[in-house]
Image (cartoon, helix red, strand yellow):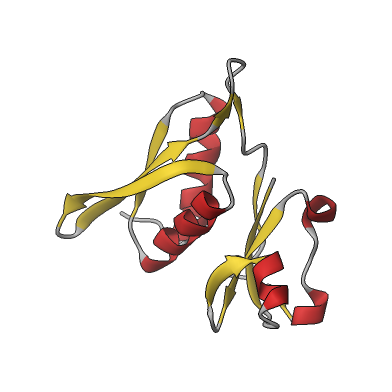
Length: 133
């Protein structure tokens, strides 16, 4: 049975793959996981992603990014902010700064899924999905 919280599932899969230094990981495709993958790629946390599978069984194949020869993962922490049981919303002026701007918060806004910086620039608030650094 598929988990109800696809975002937590996605973050856990990425976290686990980074922990054991896998180069790729598979995540079930939803509109939300696809949007988060696009933000992660744009912000340089993952190398790339592609959709695989057919019909109902579609997956996003995320290619993870590591630092040079030491193979230290670029993503050191993924933290879920808003959960199905406790949603976390924020107005534009109250958007969090993750590690003083080193990390990002991924926000679901009325204008789509974007980073905290992008949301501030576009003057929108929304649901804080997760923090990444």
